[in-house]
Image (cartoon, rainbow, N blue to C red; front, side, top):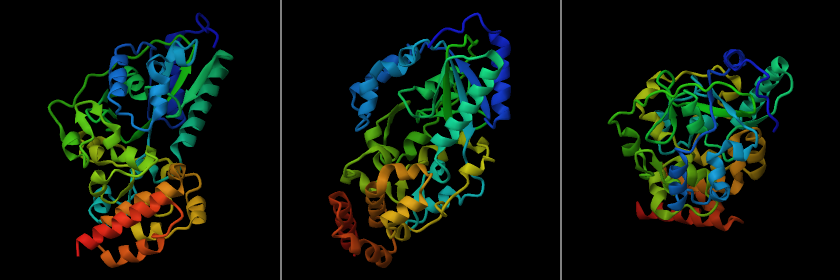
Length: 357
């Protein structure tokens, strides 16, 4: 990446970038520098504890996550952008979590794959900047590389890091995606905002698997989002009952956060619910064939976990379901499934229902 220093009026350009970003549909944008040295010790400690679990790429990239200029040489500024995702027409999360026979899917995954939506939007913003300042060097990130996006967004003034480790905004809560443009443009950084979690620990207390082991410290190996999405093997038995009907991700820590009363609904049609996934029975989803999984979830972030993990997660949900007859009818045909992981979780679910007789 070559240098663009001295080529632009940084202050005016930063103001224009925020304006162009809002015109493209982003709800907020900010500028961060590249000094993340204060966050690096926390990252190294987190890795040393093994809290990243199967996410080997976290350890493999190591300190590059905290050094933007090492990840993309020549980077001097990072543009951080926020895109809200909450579909106001989706069935209430609490209603689904309260019905053990329905499948709970994290609210961010109900519509189109956010990676695609966010990347396209950021690329459009980069081209708009390019039209104003002539060619400049940049790279777009959408949760797709070793980027400390929450720390960068915090430094860019978009919010503060909550005790659950997600970014919280005073006027928008936490239901949004973050994306970044690493660039060689010398832009003036914004001022971080103060923290407003205070003594509140609701997110820590509500976590079904006690994954938030201390304020601002998440043990991913206990986190339901990790277990149902990133983890490739069998879900550890001690966590299966606690997972309940959460078959893709978990929103509990956000649902109880007082700041999410200010969360804003998204007007993005791409994030509107698809395939009725906001209110659908576990047994119905478990009955999907591989072809149905691939076809119906085309363009969805859920498809990334693959059919085997999808069935694994649903088997756990069915093991925790209350409608025993429907659960058993769904589970039994897969006792001889081709996947050993699916067979194991089906057997566990059947045994769990047998114990409750």
